[in-house]
Amino acid sequence: MKLKNSYFYTLRENVKDEDSKSSNLLVRAGMIKKSSAGVYMMLPLGYKVLNNITTIIREEMDATDCQELIMPSMISEDVYVASGRREGFGKSMFSLKDRFNKPFVLGPTHEELFAIAAQMKIRSYKDLPFSLYQIQTKFRDEPRPRYGLIRVREFIMKDAYTFDRDETGLDVAYNKQFNAYKNIFDRMDMDYKIVRADTGVMGGLLSEEFQAVTEIGEDTLVLCDSCDYASNIEVANCVNSDEPTTLQTMKLELVETPNARTIEEVVDFLQQPTKQFVKTLVYKVDDLVVACLVRGNREVNETKLRKLYNANNVELADADTVVRVTNAAVGFAGPIDLQCELVMDDEVSKMHNFITGANKTGYHYIGVNVSDFTANKIADIRNIQEGDICPKCGGKIYFKHGIEVGNTFKLGTKYSVALGLEYLNADNQLQPVWMGSYGIGPARCMAAIAEQKADDDGIAWPMNIAPYKVAVVLISVKDEVQTELANKIYALCKESKIDCILDDRDERPGVKFKDMDLIGIPVRLTVGRKASENIVECKLRGQQEVVEIHLDELMDKLKEMTKE
Image: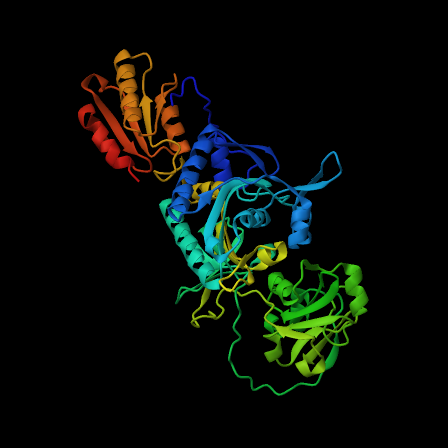
C-alpha cells in the first residue's frame, strides 16, 4: 500500500473517551473508531491486523479437520426458549420483532443452531464424529462496555463445535481443539494462562479459559507459587487452615455498638481483629432470600452461591428486604434469629467466639459460636485470597489479571437432550450426541496483544500479526533517485509476497518515523541520502540499531527477517 493516496491517518494526542492503553493506541493508529458505546468501526489497518489473526485461527482449525460455515445473526427467540437459555441470557440479548410480531434475537452465541444443523446429518453412530466452526458477528447488550475492543456489544467470534457418540469421543475432540488453541496463541506470541472457569449460561461439564495476562484484565487469575494450579477466581476452591484452636467457648453477650454498621466501624469500635468478625450479607438468589456468613476479611463468591442454589440470578438484596428479614437497620444483620435461608461458609464453621450483628439496631453479639444458630447449608462460598493455601499442593496463592481471549467447553449432552439431537447406536437404540464448544475472540486478541506489546512509541506487533511487515520510508519525495529506489523496493516486496507499505507522503521524516512506530510495522527501511548507491537503512521496531543494506542483499535479508 502506498500512503499518499490511501485511507491513512494517525492522531498525535491521546483519546479522551478511551479507558485502556490498547484502545487509545488502536484509535490513535487509525485502526478502530468508536461509533457508539461498545460498538467500533474496524478501519483498513485494523482490519488487516484482524485478518492476520483470523488467518492463524483458520489454519489451526482447518488442521483439525474442522469445517467452516456461517450462521445467521438474527435468530428466532423460540430456539433459545427450547434450549432453556433465554431466561439465563436475560437483558444481555438484543431482542426485536418482525412485521408479523414474531420475536427474534441477535445471536449472542450459536450452540442451538449448530445442534439443529447437526440434526440434518446425524442418523446413526456411523455419522459421528465431526466438527464445525464459523467466524461471525455476535451481539450482547453489555451494561458497561469498556476497554475498547475488550468489553463490547458487537464483536466477532470464532466458535467451533464438536459432535461425538460418547464422553470418550468428546474427550478426544476436546483435546484436539485444546491443543489447536495453544498453537493459535503461541503463534500470536501472546503471554497467556489456561485456567479452570465457571460454565455459566453455557452449562456443561467443564470450562477452561485462555487468559491474556494484562494489568487491565477484568478476570482475576488464581495461580500458585509452587505448582501449575490455575483457576479463574470465580471457581477457585478455598482450603481451610488446619490450625487447631485452644479457645474456651465464651458466653454469648449482646453489646451496644451505636452508629457502627460496617465491618471497619465495628472493628474500630470493639478493637478486635477483622478476622474475628463474621459478616452476614443478604442476597436475592432468584426469588429466594439467602443470608451468607463469611469471615470479616472475606468476600462472598457470587458464582459459587449461584451454583450452590442452581440459580440464574444472584444479587445483593435491597434495603427493604434486609430490614424485613433482620428486623433491624441495614448494617446489623447477624445469623441468630434471622428470618430467612442461611448459608455458612465452611471456614466460619471452624471459628469460635466470633462477633456478628445482633439483628437489633445499634447492637452486635460477641462470643458467638456455631451452636448459637442453625445454618441451612454449609459450603465454600468465599473468594480465595492472595496468600491462601493452594488447593492442589498447599503452596501459596497469588493473583494476576487476565483478558479472556478463548474458552473451551465440554457441553456433554445438555443441548442435544434439549433439542432432540440423537443418533442410533449399534444396537439400534437412540442416544444423545455429545457436544463440545470452543470460542475465540479475534478482536479481543487484537486488543490483548496491543496491550501486551505497547511501548512509549506505539504498538510493537508480532511479525505475523502486524498490518504490514515492512515499511519503506521515502525521505524526500522530490528526489527522483530516492523515489525510484523506494518504488523499486516496494515492487520487489510485492513480487516476493512480503506485505509492504510505502510512505510516499510529503511529510517530515520524523513524522513518518513516528507513524510507522505507532502503527507497529516490524521492519523499517529508510530510503535517503545513500539512494544513489542503492543503500538503505534498516531498523527493527523496538531496537535502536540501524544497519545499512545494499539493494543486492536486501530481499534475502527481508525474507529472513519477516518469516514467521
